[in-house]
Length: 567
Image 1 (cartoon, one colour):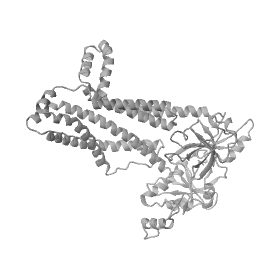
Image 2 (cartoon, helix red, strand yellow):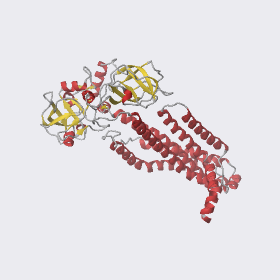
Image 3 (cartoon, one colour):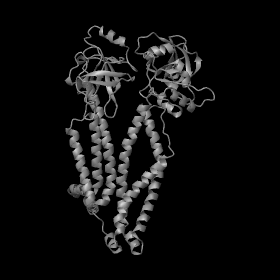
Image 4 (cartoon, helix red, strand yellow):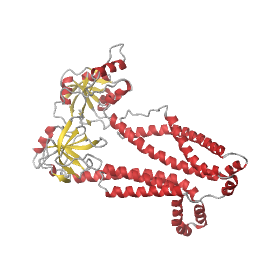
């Protein structure tokens, strides 16, 4: 059975317009695909005529609809539909919250891609397993570029927003996870080094009474392994709770489907424990290596002394990290990178400075003490002078406590400022690029194409242009979706200020595309005005187009397949 899905907006009898959310939009299907979920009629009957629809039980409850009510599709110039029935999905499945069904012929007309479908579902005869059926289908469609899914993998086809949600979670997990591991490495290394320095006398006594350097190292490494495992276990359960809270927050803000939930992988605890043990062992190895190799007499002599400054190798690595951060900062400010590339460079710049802070912590603490010495003497009294004296004598001990705070504040501050900067720039540029005096829009997929003609015919209207925000696949390194804007009719310059840097938008029409500098940066697609490029429209249709202009705006433009907003 073919499955044809169409994004819709439903206008209820009371005038409300229901369109769902970005993560769970209101979607229409042909009734022939209802058995795939499966949906079953709980009241009324299946759609029999072109003006009949069946709505999901969750949607019926939200919109207060029942069989016999009349509804319309917002933004479409179509006669009203009659609710013929209400259908429910299996218990625990929320598919009926934002689903409605048409007759097969009406769904195909709304889908507007004759002879095509989003997917083809197959059900097995009694006694045939899903795995066996999947293998038979794979053999039947071999060489046609089709993907056959079964079992748990069906979710990839059932929820079309899943790839975006998975990408969001993957970027969040890897981006934040790597930084957190690095911060943990430096914080634990500083803490372990401080602990080892404070126990040098005990290690020296062990060596003096006959313990070998290897025994001392193994004793400390075993101790750190136990502490690393204990720390992982202690953080595991709170981590599960925080992960569930984070997923719930993302779902409540419609960044991922509301049905998303945390999945506790049984391998997570061993992996987390392994990471904790490895970090603790690496930090402990370098901290104990020098102390365990000293002769007992020398170790006892140095036990009462605390090294104030980092060793030469650490100093050189720290200065190199700061130098790399300064170089990345200058490159970000000077080189003609795209905005996405600049954000990535900014995060790498912050990471370089964080490594420099971790390696040069004692020296930075000493510099801070020198800068605060006079103000503290004037305002802090005797207590302040004593505190600064302790900092001056033992900067490494203070640095081990300061580093964790500094690294965490740097990471959170960088992410927060980058996000705030992006939001502010988007709002500012959005208002600057819109030159029209009025905007007409509707929730959901947008306005019907006939609305553009109707608005143009109104008295006092000079120009009207249709705008459809859409994600367009542009073939450049990384193969990512780019933010696009589909254009319908009228001169663009009358309603949009796209800041053309090269080429022209005069006569912009079918077969043309204009690319922003976001898509033509140093690591993006290398295409000049007058050359051709093949992009993919949101429905997967290849679009071979001529590049007519480069834009300073962050949005690319191309002729549309459907109107979403009128200016």
